[in-house]
Image (cartoon, rainbow, N blue to C red; front, side, top):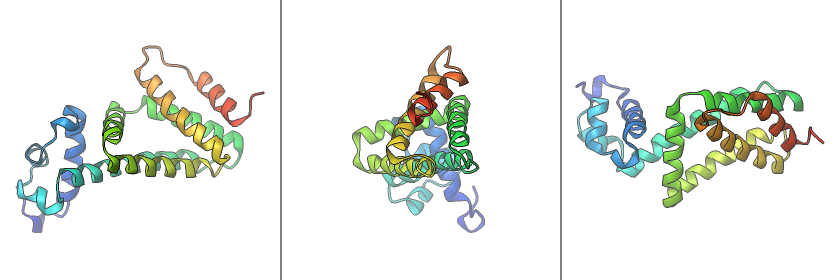
Length: 182
């Protein structure tokens, strides 16, 4: 194992190992010992870098939420018309639902924590606010809230369905919410 002086990426490795372990075992299977072993760091590094397991989980899940916000930015950033924004939302839903199952598992684990513990609800509310702010660059606040819920719901349905809705159905749902379909 490398020492802290020669291992400037130790903190990032711990966070990555935490998310990997959550994907494999769920939050309930996470411990300092398991994370340290996965990250190949001394157990003492855990308390050096993080005040406790909740601090570590919040930071890891914050990174996960940041990843999703970056995907929103990537998809919506180029849109300059309402039609382009609608197509960007459609693409985003399909990217998220066809992406790594890892993202789906991490998101659902975060939602489960948020349902039980206020600090994780705060994290989720912050993530949702950031996502809606990006949508509000193209749509009204009410429409952005509805689109955000649609993105979450269709992403989950498409990821879990054995015959997921096609792009045309997604495009139609986005158009309906945004008022582009009478």
